[in-house]
Length: 70
Image 1 (cartoon, rainbow, N blue to C red):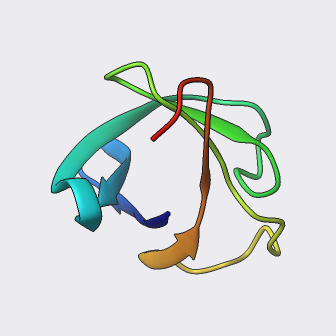
Image 2 (tube, rainbow, N blue to C red; image 1 turned 45 degrees about the horizontal axis):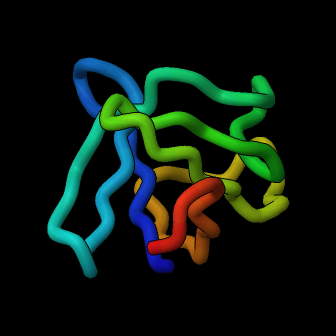
C-alpha cells in the first residue's frame, strides 16, 4: 500500500490515502526508520522499504502491513 511519511510538530506520522487514515508513528524498529517496521498509534505495523538514512521527508513509499490482512 502507498503510505506518505512526514515529520510534523509532534513527530513522525503516516498517511494512508487509500484508507484516508493519518496516524502518528509511535515506535520504530530501526533508528534510521527505513528497512524496518514502524508501529502506528492505531496498532498497525508497517514494513518500510530500505532507503538511505538521509532520505528527505515527506515521501510516499510502498509499505506492507504486517499482521491481519488489509
